Length: 382
Image 1 (cartoon, rainbow, N blue to C red):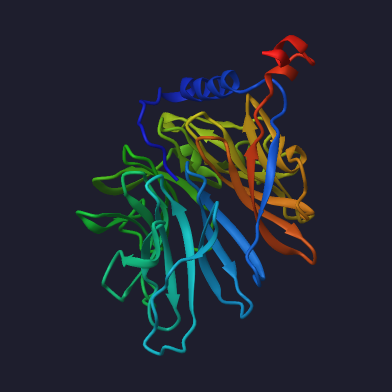
Image 2: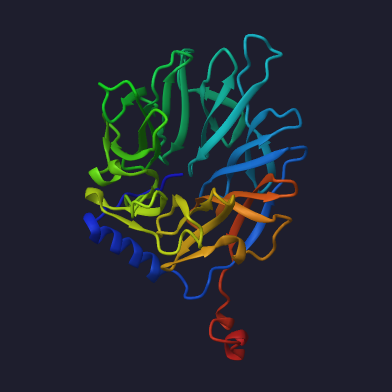
């Protein structure tokens, strides 16, 4: 989800310091606390939450009892199936994926009609039973990953079953699908994708040579090109995954050249800063979401030990989100924190049972003024 209003972002290393200080000054002093809600779908073999908007509507996908992937919308009234196209053979199962939702209730994702097409889809939360195709060209495989509040869709584009490299694409209601290519369109071995966009049209993504590490990229809606974030980000593993209204970009980067990429904030002109404590004692991680208040969420991981945690960075400090919730809701641990909205509500995935995957919503519990400095009877009486 992208934020509503654009505020110019200061340049260079000063931008990072400003972003980190703003987050520190806007949050309460103590550790954050969250109420945990489990997003259950009857019969599902696994549930994956991808995004949340400011109204608290959540989108993602689940694996049904036949192991078919189904896109969903979840809100206060429960789970709503998102419609999918059918194949030439009506008995062909169609998989679906919902990637992102904006504050207008527009949802983007894609279907996968095996051996036929991979259409990009636009739904509306007001009527989940209908969808719009982003392109009528069946040879295109489009995978949208984000939609701004003013309806700009971005993601990955490929020629279906042609072997063509992946390119970043931008879709608008007026202009349709526009190919933004890669960081070097003369080199057909480069793959690329846009991961996020804000209302100002600032784009973030990644590019890579086939079977090689990714590198962060940037661009601007209206200028069909992709640029490397910096020489430094091109020299090591990196990726830009999310951007807020102020242009604060987050992602991951092998900052110290150790081989482990960690959660970072990117500034203008390629400056970068590791998010303090975001790996939660593990080897690596990724920042995956950021809101306008500078709250960052993501994942800490160590694939050598198969350890995973979800982090939230707020008030200048990183926290293990699982340790801050009021109840485990049957989950053994969190795998990731995927997105955060303006209210600080977080969605992500968790493990339970026999390595099964479930989805959660973590809602901030407001501080009670009468307990802010110990119990104050006078405050309680007011």
